[in-house]
Image 1 (cartoon, rainbow, N blue to C red):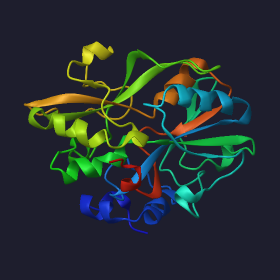
Image 2 (image 1 turned 90 degrees about the horizontal axis):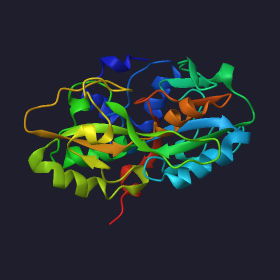
Image 3 (image 1 turned 60 degrees about the vertical axis):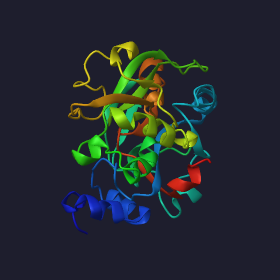
Image 4 (image 1 turned 180 degrees about the vertical axis):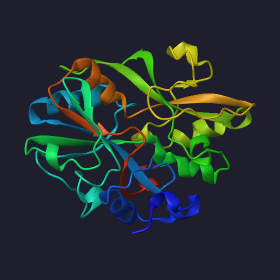
Length: 269
C-alpha cells in the first residue's frame, strides 16, 4: 500500500471512505480534513456502559457541540455508517484517557477493547468543508496541510450526570466578504455542528492567543480574514478531562472516522 502522506490533495480527496479506512487500518496517521471529499466524517466518544447514559444525556443537552449520528451497542465494532469497518482500527489515531488523564495515543484499540464499551459517533465540521470549498471559500488548514486549530473556551457545556466541562471550538479564518456565505452554508448542516457559535474577537470566548490552540495546529491567518468559530466534537473529551471517568476513549483531534454517508444526506433545505 502506498503512503497516504505521499498523495496530493486531489488524490486524498478522491479516495473512497473504504479506501481511506484501509490506510488507517494499516497504521498510517494523518489528519482527515480533505480526505474522501463529499463523505461525512465523525468524532468518537467510547465509554464503559455504566457511563453511556451520562454521555447520551450530555449530547442531548449540548446538541451544537455533540450532534449524535449513531451509537454502537456495548461491544459492537461496526455499523451501517461504515459498513464492514472496525471502530477499533479504522480511525487514524485515538486518545485513551484513564481518570481524565491521557495515557496513550494508539492507532489500534485492540489492546484496550472491552465488551462493555459503547461507542458514540458524533458529527464533525469537516463534513461541511467540501460545501465551503465548492462555494469558493478557502479552508486554511486544508490549504496549509495542517490539522484544524481547536480551542477550549470559557463557555460551559450543560452538565449531565458525571459529565461536565467547557465547550471546545474549531476555528477557520474566513475572508470578511465571505463570512455571511460561510454562515449560510454551514447552517444547512445542523447534524455536523451547523452555523458558527462565534465570529470575530476570540477573547470573548476566553481565547487569548490563536497561535496556541489546545488541540490541532495553528494556521496562518491571512490579512482581511475573520476568525470564525464552530462548536467542536472534541467537547466530550474536554468533559472527560474534567470529569475524570476511569476510562474513556476518543479520536485524536482532527483524526476522524470517515463514514460511508454522503455529506449531502446531512444537508437540510
